[in-house]
Image (cartoon, rainbow, N blue to C red; front, side, top):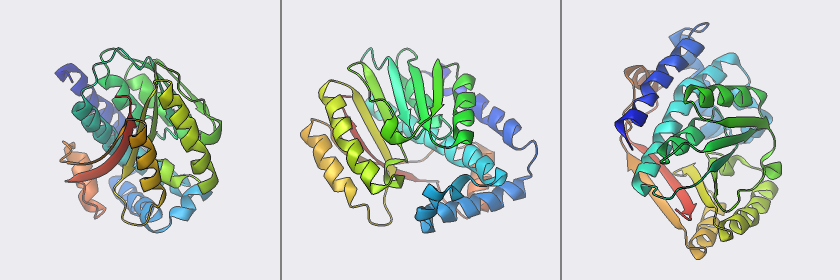
Length: 253
């Protein structure tokens, strides 16, 4: 990845701080981040009930903390893949959140593909649109359930970052064959999830299907180059992302 593209991250992060610290103090963001991490670690059932983004503080914490970390993580994975193909021409980002992960993939490609983001939360739809505009990416973001999101075509890519484990089981079961059908047509598929601290029985089944289709199952660990304010927030909230662990399923890269 070129230094020019890497330089886009600091400017985006600075804009994030201006956007989300305008009406909230650091201490408020820290407390919201602690509450948000509790939802993700201890109350995962509450995610589908909207508890993760049910306050301005949590939304700001998600945008300021998890968004940048997701960008850095996906960028790291794409650097390892070293994409050389002239596609995807379009990236479909399902459960796109703030749009950071989709932006990271788009910027890793030799030319900028368009990004189509889908998320159920209205705030995420707005935030993803803002993120993608900051990076100068052609985009369209819509409010839509994962089960209703379009699947990628031959020269498209699909990203599901930190979302598959949050889906209802019936939706997750229905998503896999749709992904495999797109992969068989030549679409690039990338699934990103944290290294599980609890049971995720679906992972091994999905990994087997991806590998049978010629894909990969990988686990990654790296030291993210975090801005100082992001490191401070990480420490203040008693989190530790000095070494970031994640795992991916991929095919057609």
